[in-house]
Image (cartoon, one colour):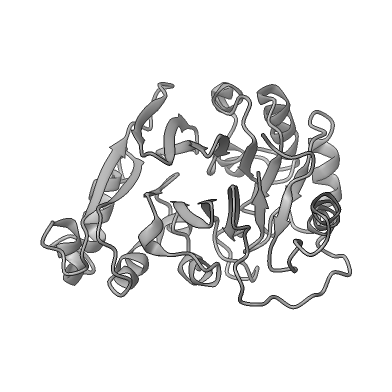
Length: 328
């Protein structure tokens, strides 16, 4: 169950030095007001707590190269082990290192969709893993394809397959891998409304559902871990309103805040507005909302976005920044 206030640790400083409730409240205030006076330098110690379930923001930005943030990417921690990586966005491999995560601990990598700003660093993770001594298969799971958009298996083949851009990494797709493990790629249907739930370990269970992101095959993911549930929406519009049921009762809803309410046209076909975010969170009855994928068109409008969301949802609301970590 989510605490009355989320536990917070991130690059704005550590919050475990005061009593738990006071620390969490103070850090929540700083996170909600990123322009505040909190200026403690970030050190290199672990960002998240040693026990329980934590959601870490590896990247809070979007596709822009002018926002000083990594692309939208996330880690789910359980008892100080990073168990799930959601999207391999530009900058995420550096943030993974800064977070103190260990590639050997990952139970899976999942993709919400295969746009460059969400998936481009996948080969960097695979190449870098050669040096860490992983010795068990790595499930890599993402959407199937549609027209010009490849499915996840073909996407991986085009990057690290025998005829891929980085063909020298091809043996990672076999049990003869010089890296010590095999990349096990799986496709998940990205059309219709059927819930997929065919992956689990003794630590985590995953479910996915197709979401509308214009013409792009896309998935939302639900993670059950350590008695908590976290939903990552990825990029999506609110077409067919599938998210409230999928996210029902989640402890944390990590949802993308890429457009303001005034957006129109293609942008609105690809993303949800702040008003829709509030409606979804309220209908789903989630405990906490984390706003990721923050773009220049929404930065600086936090007050307006908050007001739009809080017309329907009045629980904890976080405007994410790189490397912040939230305890459930």
